[in-house]
Length: 478
Image (cartoon, rainbow, N blue to C red; front, top):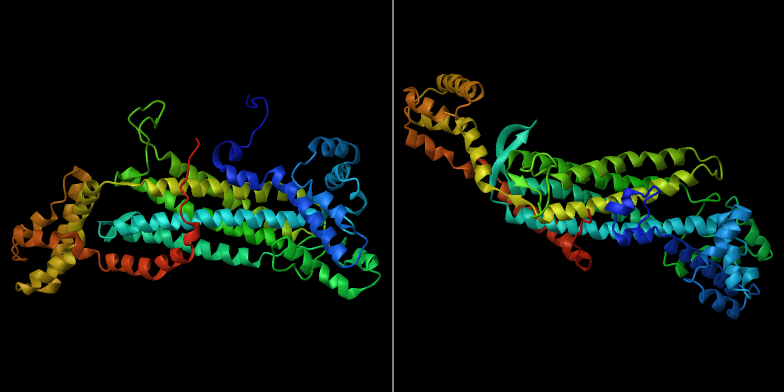
């Protein structure tokens, strides 16, 4: 039975994948705590403390079978989550009870786990982002020669191709991938720094042996799959790290929002549509409607993520000296929900981009309605070749364009600019001559070539380097 009498986050109920939800689950969090306690115990044993292999083996035997009932009951008594889990682990590991968490603070498990969670979540986001790039690249390649109206200020402008427009979406996600991989590559563990970052407790444990204490962080990092730990910190890792990570997520959200807005506008124009399932209902009242609900959801979630990025920035700025605890509640929400939302956003982008439906006839109709205006420069040059005066022709074509535009806007008629020019003896051009100027491919410039070069020189090498990440396809639950 589903829980129907309490709040359930839409991020877990409707949007985020099971894979991302697992990364932010209690199971992942608390098994990571136990792995960190094992890494600490092994490090301390290897550096000479009186810790036995039997104790470590006992701890390893209970990494995953977490006794949540014991931990929760203990937390009600002591009001401390870490000490509750130290206690619960000790119940399962009586021989190791006395050495679990030895010399560490709560942030040893809390902060290192947060870094590990963000690192794993970034891996999943990276995989989905690479697949978004792959899908959009296929669309750009397929549509590289399809002429369409371009828009500046959402006013008809010099034509482009649908494939070239797709490269604009694509390139923003490529920039996001670069930002993600950079930040991901700079993530380090906190290590075990102690209550104010001085490692005083470990200096005491190792009888003042500085060299042994120097080895603790590198050894823990290696055991947990990281290259290194942050060289200095207070009790916590700098909350600037969360700011950098959430800014990456906000960048992805901004790119997704731009993409979804363009799809929504194109769907309004009936030129391109997002996928629409056979049994899908577009409107409860207007049965004929095909609302772009997936693109709208992308925009909606993306705005949430862009605003969410302010949380870690403000939290980072408010940390007093070596640490305060006003980060904890905010951080639990902002980081997890930012990742869950972007995970859902990328699934939606994958779904929409992979199922875009193009209507070439509608695109052509819109383009041909505006092309006479855009062809006036070419027409004027042809008229000059036929013996006309450029300055006089420029003024005349300006006047005729205004008249034709008025006819379209005020009377709702088709664009008759070509007929007006053909009827004007100043141009000395027949309607047949003029229609030769109406090939859209004459006005798309280097768009197809630009698409080819961009895909060949930028996207193909990028995807080849990350081919092990390809193959993800989105499933949209609701």
